[in-house]
Every structure is written in structure tokens, then in C-alpha cells.
Length: 406
Image (cartoon, rainbow, N blue to C red; front, side, top):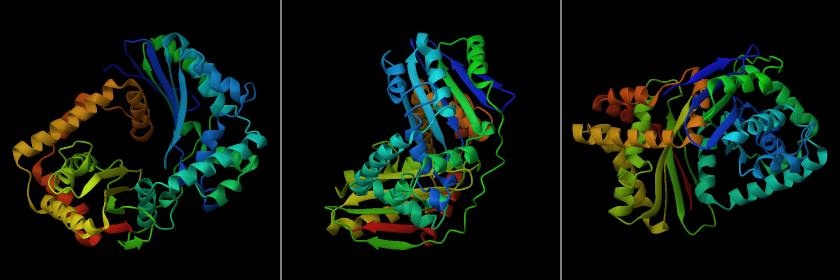
């Protein structure tokens, strides 16, 4: 895979992969998310993501929304705990429009007070909608329990009280403190020549003033396992159990990724799906997840079930975790697990929008790009002993925390 990389004097980096096709994708990923907020700023990174579409020095909100939509394109954004991304998908002949609009809303937004007040109401409705979805809410509550009293543990949306407190001044202060050129990557995938890509990158992002941020100030506190039961007015019981796990740069991360997929990933043949749903009919929705951050990670298993099946479902789940701690995978099982992961990765590379964001995040976090072939070689090197060691570490019963909605 041919990859173009370029760094401007202001430290904004570019990664571009030229492909065939009528549609091109591009985005700006900023190494700032909800974990960079103080307690008084809880939810402001997400509000800013919304407000970027509400007007710039030269465009009103309607013109921002219509600029790409009128040409059949799409402009979107998202906020995570560690990053904010603004991205677009357009016909390749409209590619410069996409670069222009992303640069404009990221660096020239004016955050009108009237729009801030309206968007607060929108986000509060988003929070209320989330509170009505226990199968989603429990994941945030679990991370809040695991990372207690830490920015990483707080949910991305904020609270109605915190959101209501934000002003144009607090928004600009957060941006001034956290939106640094040294922590930005512009990423692109599409039928755009390397020469044209560099010209557009220099034209739109070259004049920006350099701004550096050394590192995140907050550190992760010592993890203490805990178990909590919360009373909820729900038809199902919801249960999540897990542990802290490996950070983004830990060499065990890929093995953990493989182990998580084997246990409860997206495949219908995952161990938890087979044991809880297919064999015993105890749960409709069952999954495991592994999220890695710059300095830590979190692993969790989730399922929803009828109240009378809760204890049995927990017992089966813990039994599956212990099997992986105590029984080595055979060569056939391990190869199947590796091939499944490779297939998922290959499918992701064929999705050019997903690939664009993946390339950008890889350069942002690791300052390098691994090709699919290089990643597959790393997967091939994982052996059964490594998988068992990871399972023994992360699935140790005394380290597990559990949260139950009843």
C-alpha cells in the first residue's frame, strides 16, 4: 500500500493513500477528547464538536451544512475520550471543497451565543435518550466505576448541569488550551494525486500558526476492583464485568485484541455467543469489548438477560474466562482465530472511509503506519502461550469488577 506522508512547519501531519474510485474521503483528527476536560468542563469537547457546524467567520450554519450536501457529499464528526475528528466523503471532483470546509470549521468557527444555547438543549435531549438505553449506559457507568474520580472515567456527553454552564468564553478557552497543531493529523483516501494532495494541504493548513502541547496532564490512578448492583426500572437485567487492560503501545495489545474477538467479538461463533445464546438461550445480546487508550485500557463482557437467568449467565461467563486462563488453544483453534481477525482487518481496509480514519489515528498515536501485511505478520507471531498469559492476567477473578442493573 502506497502511503504519502508530509509534515508542515507548524507540525500538522498529513497521511494520504491514493485509490481508484469516484468517492474521496478526508478528515482532521485532533488528539483531544473528553479526558482532557477538567471537572467543570465535563462535556465541553462534545459540545464543541457540535458547535463546529454552527457558523464561521465567512459561513453561516446553513452554508456549512449545504456546502457538501448539495453535491451529494457528507460532512460529519465524532468525539471520543481521547480524540475529536471532523471528516467528509465527497465525489473526487469536490475534494477541495471538503478540505476547505474542514479547515474553515476547525479554525474559524465563531460559536454564536444563540447557537450555543440551542445546541445545549439538543445535547441534553441526547443525554436523556442515552439514559433511556441501559444497554448503552452501562458501559459508561462501568468505565466510571473502573476509573473512579478520573477524567477518563467520565462519560463523553457531560451532564445537563455541566452542559448548561458552558459559554462562548469557556469554549474558546478549551480550544486554546487543547487544539494544538502538533496534535493534529489530516488524513485522506481517494483518487487524488500526491502532488495535488500536498498542494491542497499546504494551501489550507500551511498558513496556520504553530502550537505545541507536550503531553496530557492527567495520570491514571491505581485500579481497585469493585462490584456494584444498581436498581433500574428495566425489563432485563444488564450485567457487565471486566478489568483494566493494555494501553495502545503495549506489545500485548494485538494478542488482547485477538483474545477479545475469540471470546465475544462480532462473530456469531464467539465463545460467549455460543455458550450463552446458542447452547442455553439465556441472552439475546452478548459481547466482549477491549478499548485501549494512550496510558491504559479496559476489557469488559456484557450481556442482558431475564432476572431468573442472571446467576447462571454470570457463572457461564466466568467459566469461559477461566477456560481461556487454564486451557491452551490448540493450533487449529488459534489459526481460525487469527484468520478471522485478518478477515475483519481486510474488510476494514476495503472500507475507504474507515481506512482513512484508521490511517489518521495510527499516525497521530504511533507516528507511523503499519500496512495490512505487516499487521498480519504480527498476528501470525502470536502463539498459544501468549494468549494464555494474557488471559491469566486480565481474566484473573480477583481483578474483575462487576456492574449489574436489576
